Amino acid sequence: MTVLDTRSAAAPLPVEAIRAPRPRHYLMCTPSHFEVAYAINPWMDVTVPVDVDRARLQWEVLRTTYLSLGHRVDLIDPLSGQPDMVFAANGGLVIGGRAYGAKFRHPERAAEGGAYAAWLTANGYRVTEPGRTNEGEGDFLALGSMILAGTGFRTSLAAHIEAADALDRPVVSLELVDPRFYHLDVAIAILDDGNGQAPADIAYFPGAFSRHSQRTLRDLFPDAIICSEADALVLGLNAVSDGHHVVLPTAATELAASLRDRGYTPVPVDLGEFIKSGGSVKCCTMEMHR
Ligand code: ARG
Image (cartoon, rainbow, N blue to C red; front, side):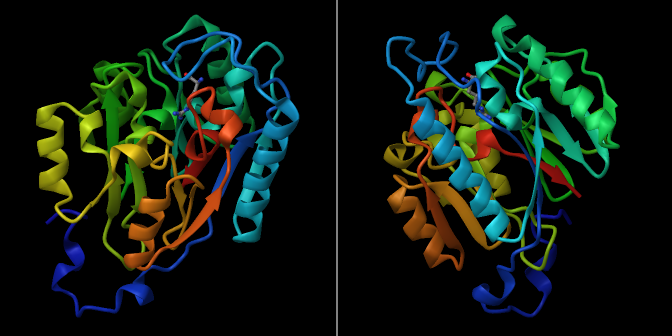
């Protein structure tokens, strides 16, 4: 049996009782140099100004939200000339003391790969240097004993195999087909990673995926929350869950209601300045998975 249904035989607990938070360890990057200086996804428009003070404030609220929920937040120093480095999720994939480094698709972000790898190495993680193009947790989501991996816009299929090897975990490849949802973490939210009392649980927007990947998701997660296009378009799925609290963009109101129905506590935060770059909550957050 897979991690997805090992608990089905156990005596059913009320859902509120099993949606327990687990303390997490995150890495974030101060948005000191954040701006939209180039356009590498459909959200980015260099003619739309970013309010940098507001961005800084929104990011600070996200950081303190994590702290108030009892999580640990480490910080990496931002590099000047790397406006997207605030999107820490893209810096690698860390599971159980090991890390698979990032190798960015676009030259504009290339320097971030080495910066994140250096931080991870200095902080005791064994980093596998990537040979293949991949954008870390932007396209790799740790779930139970496996990794959900996106491809189509940024991360190459070859990197899926490299990640599986580097982290010794099976990978499920999923094909993204809508350029607005160019990373897996804007198309799927991990609500419960399945490593606690409750089974793995996700929310996703089917329209972001090819037909066969929609089928894969249906087969693996028949009970998933189906996110509306409207909520996906405010990057509602770019959320971070500790198993109970789901930190998500304020505008994703329908998704928040579905989460509440399922025993989660939605924690809305406004990251409106970062949407101008195609990012939100999860993009700003790398999780050091156990
Ligand atoms: N402007 C950034 C890019 O296009 C946004 C990255 C968002 N990160 C994420 N994990 N989805 O690369």
